[in-house]
Image 1 (tube, rainbow, N blue to C red):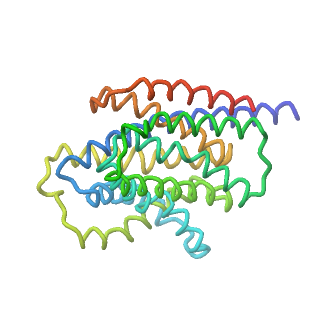
Image 2: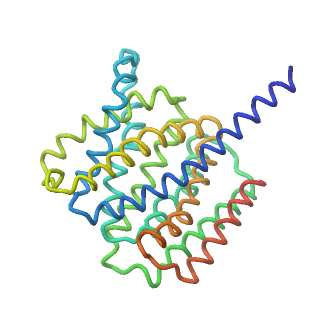
Amino acid sequence: MEQSENLVAKSGKFSAYLAAIVVVFIWSGWITLSRMGVHTNLTPYDITLLRFGTAAILTLPFSLRYDWKSVKWHQIMLVALGCGFPYTMLSFIGLKTTKAANAGVLVNGMLPVIGLLFTILWFKERVSKMKYLAIFVLLTANLLMANLASSFSASYLPGILCLLSAALVFSTYMAATRRWGYGMKDVIAFVPLVNAVLFFPLWLMNPSAILSSPAQDVLIQMIYQGVVVSVFALLLITFSVSKLGSGPMSVFLSYVPVVTAVLAFFFLKESLSYTEQAGIVLCSAGLMIYAKS
């Protein structure tokens, strides 16, 4: 019986690791596609509406069957907005002035550091010295990836602050999901709907280019942002956090800058410097250290 339970536990962890790896590729594609999207006629408000509006329509059957009477609204709002339009709007605004590779660094590269703070301060858990080392290596790698000296200037500061704020907001979502035990059925029922309802008035108050944009641009954003990211990836992240915890998931997501840099190299023609290449190697080493700690 004990051996059978161990096999089930190992199988669950393997599935969670696999889900986390898939999310890394989805998130990297999201950053790359968002970088492309904000340089089309579509505004950040348009992309956000397409993302959550599409997701809300797809998940409406789950929302209608959800037990709203037992809802703890302060928890739901924190979880929903943590991975919702505040996160996406901050990311889109930052992507206006920041390379996709650097955006991946500032958002996802900072997740292990912020996740560590949540682990210590909110969950009161002890962290091994090897995990501290791994997070230090990951942070160093991501700073190399950012290539601060040549990539950023004072004019980029607002974008940088927006991306760092996006990292804090998303870290809150992962920690809150774990803290309050929300599962896949919960987040799929309320996250898209809450964000679509709350964001729609904001969209109405801002200029829109949806009707004047090529149908191809709109459909790409609807499919990837609204289906792949807001539904599929959301389920995978929630599953991985429930099995592994928010700390390990944030470490996986810290590899997003590496994959983003490669995708940006091929699709956005953003070159990779030697420093960025060194950051990729170091980031891989940090992940290996964390996995063995």
